[in-house]
Amino acid sequence: MIRFDHVTKGPVRNLSFDLDRGGTAKILFNSEDRKNLLFGMLAGLQRPETGKILFFGEDLFAHGENERLALFRRIGVVPAHGGLISNLKAWENLLLPAWYHRGLTAEQAERPVAEIFDQLGPGEAGLKQRMGELPGQLSLYERRVVALARAMLMEPDILIYDFTFAGLDRDAVQQLMKLTGEFHGRKAGRVSLYLCPDDAVSARLVVDSTITLTQ
Image 1 (cartoon, rainbow, N blue to C red):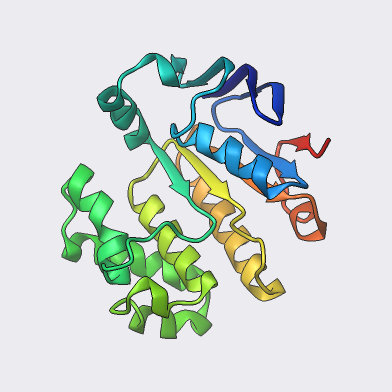
Image 2: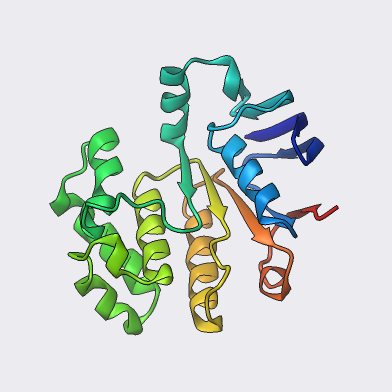
């Protein structure tokens, strides 16, 4: 499902790994610059100097922009800071991709989004009420929850988490780890890839394989 074949760009040198159907993995970093570089390649924004990046057996950079966009309809990405459009309300940010790519209406999205929020516990009732706010008025945790719900609405085959647990308190981390783990298991064959700082919080994340990029 995801394959890096001797990929080199900048400080990322000769990286190779395979993440098969149904698998989970975390990549540990001690440099945010290196993490941002790898995230850019995974998101199709930065081309490697050498090597290949394959999703579903397809070379990501062998295609034109339109073909890459079609490929990413099966891939969800949760940026570290949410990646929300600043002049759209949280609810509009959440709904936009699912409306555009899947034709999902606000009424159709309401139930699955409510289920996602309910999984976070009763303490998240206030978050539902903040869906009319702009991203700049939300906390980092709230922006990440909106980004998670946005990605989950697309029911992707691959979900890439970018420092999703970094900088949050223990309860928030526990809630998001539980949510992402349960979401992974809801669809047969789904792949989950976590980009994580090399720290004690990330050590709590249970996955099938761990790749360390700390040298």
